[in-house]
Each structure stands twice: as C-alpha cells, then as structure tokens.
Amino acid sequence: MTELRQIPLFQNQPVTAADLNIHSELRYTIPLFQQHLQKEGKSQHTVNAFTADLQLLADNTGGDTPIGEYTTNKLNDFLDWLEHGRGVPCSRKTYARRVTTLKVYFKWLLSIHAIAHDPAKAVLQRSGPAPLAYALSRDEISAALVAARSMKKGDEVDTRPEMLFSLILDTGIKKSEAVALKPADIDRSNREHPVLTIKHKVRNIFKERHINLEPDWLRLFDEYMVQHAPKETMFNCTARNLEYILSDVGEAAGIPAKISFEMLRWSSAVRDVREGHEEEYVREKLGLSPISWQETRSKIKRLIELQTKPESR
Image (cartoon, rainbow, N blue to C red):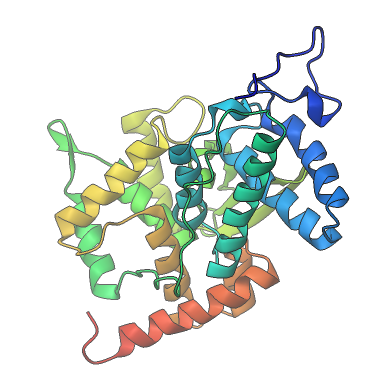
C-alpha cells in the first residue's frame, strides 16, 4: 500500500491534491474536489450539487474534521441526520445523490492516496419511496399535553416538558434551532402577540424569520425560567436530553410512535393546514424554500387524509 503523505512543513491549507493527507481538514479539500470534477468533465450543475452536499457534511460534522477521521458509521450518522435530524425534507432522489457524492468524493481521496481506505464504500443506497412521516392526531396532542403537565422534577412538577412540547408543536422549529434559542429571541413587548425570532446563516448570509407564539405559552416559559434558570441559551441541557424529554412525554401519553422534534414539526404543519392557514404562511413558518415546500405540501395533505379516514387513529 502506498504510504500516506505527511503534511507539508508550514502549510496549513493544501494548494494541490498532492498536498492532501489524512490530517487535511474537510473544508480545505472541497475546492480541490471541485477542480477534480471539472477535469472529469462534470457539468456545473453536478459540481454545484456535490459541493452543496459536502458543505452539509461539513455543517454536520465540522469543516475542520480531518478526512482521515471519517468512518462508515460517521457517514451513516450523517445520512440519518439528513433524513431525520435536520428538519428539512430529503427526497429519495436527493438522498441517493448525496450518497453518490460521498462515494465519489472518498473514492477520489483514496485514488490520490490521501486516505488509506474508503469509508463510503460500505454505505448503502436505499430504494423505494420514503416512508410517510407520523403526525400526532388531535387526541394524541391532548394526551401528550396532559402527560407533560404531570411529569416531575424531584418532588415538584417539572415545567420543561410541557413548555418544550408546546413550543415545538406551536412553532414547528427544528431541533438545531431550538437548542440555539435565547430568551432574548422572544419579543414580548405585546403580551397578546408574542413573537419568536429564529436566526440562521445560509452561505454566510444571516437571515431571520418570525413566528407568532401563543400568549398562554409565555406563562409556561416564565415558570420554566424560574424553575430551571438557564444562563445563556433557553435550554441548559443537550439536544439529546431534549429528545429524551419528548420521548418520555410520548411514552407517558401512550402514543405508539416515538415523539421527536421531526414528528412535532410535521404535526405543527398538519395542524396549521387543517386549521385553514394559508400554505405560504406554513411554508414561511417552517423556513422552507418554495422547492422544498412542494414535496412537504404533498406529504402534509396525505397525512391529513390519513387522519380524516374513519379507521384513522
């Protein structure tokens, strides 16, 4: 086997593909990969798509991750995040292309001896239509709220489960957005019409979207702040712990499916559409592009149809 190259002395950023090795950071390999694709005669559309896919990998795992640290399990976790954790619909066609991106990228790294083995080789493509998401019915939402209100923190009722469940159901925000929230993101200048501001960065451009909050939710939030006293962000625990809280609410309510951020996001959208909100309102609330909304819109309608069938749960 060809010996892996060492990092050039005093060189942090590789200039050519020959400079790459297991210690090279993912972010620095992307421009060189673009050059490789162009030399291979790939269309600009393909180059742009593959670049966007690798940027998502960088967003999820860290752009400064050395390429030698990627394993098959790490890539599978990334793909699972794309489908279930990112909070943005990922069609089967898009999923398949992203798997292809990983395979082409790591095969290239192996071919130039920048890595010793190809972690993407064992990643499997999936076939068939994506399973329809699970959205809570009205009765399940009521049962979950009752369960959340009875959960304990020591000898007293814990305010966090109900506050968290209500927040995600009412706003439809993603897990990553929830964990980044700060108390200052809530505009309560008008207590009858409080507003939540979601801030995010897209390709180095900062954007905001504003979501109306239920006035009654402010009471839950105030009680939560007194009980838990978070210091900077709204939640003083990890994203995984928040997932456990939602899961516990579902188990206590006897809901057959595991409650997650993704499920509440779908449930929020379904409830909004069923209550007669304009589709553009729902799209903007979820923070989806017009293209992403097309697939989401059709799934929401299918979920509503399932819930309105006589034999529906």
